[in-house]
Image 1 (cartoon, rainbow, N blue to C red):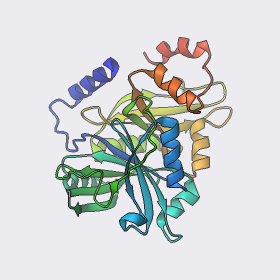
Image 2: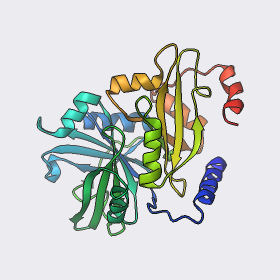
Image 3: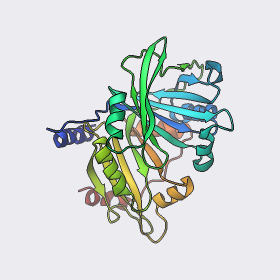
Length: 308
């Protein structure tokens, strides 16, 4: 936690004197398009300790898709499955398999966020839209980023409902104990060959982020593969998006393999914070979550040189 605060302080110093035209309050939710949302929700509850939170589907009057919302501390995951063959969600799943579609960002003003980003060159995904029910109103807007991934800006200051209008509270007798996951630390985007700097510039120019950490293929490599990465962050340091691209090696890098199997750029992984990683890992192992075998000692000895 101390390191996180140091990074946030450093970013605040970088932004000192400059107006943050896109103030972000945090990650609102992450939405996956999946083949079977109910089954996926059961997995995330059983294996990772998420709790039932909200639901939208046929029972709530939605005939296009079913969405199950899960929560653990400050993390909200939305798992969405189409309910008919004509849904564009199907096309996403057929091409990519289960994957992240929406990285939603919590903002004070979703209309201004959309205006500021689109006038700087972002392609609009969703114009500012007011959604209402008996609990108030939410304003959402959105822009495209790398691949088919989108950012949706969520303004919920005038809403007191469970999640979003159209959702109802998801009551369930099955809610396993949490495993200590606290909040989303960062989300990594994999982009194509020679596209990293293009997307770094996008986040700088369109969203006002800064590149505060960079790794080249000399720092992140094995005997067979390598990658390059630049870490982007917003003004208060709450949102961090590393951008990865492949690098030449004896074999395909993990980034190139991702691009091949996912069939394009996308969100590669979601890093989550915990106050006690030993306890969290032990709980996850006990629930059947598989981890990589222990890296060799050489990996840890090399870390200070890579992260000077």
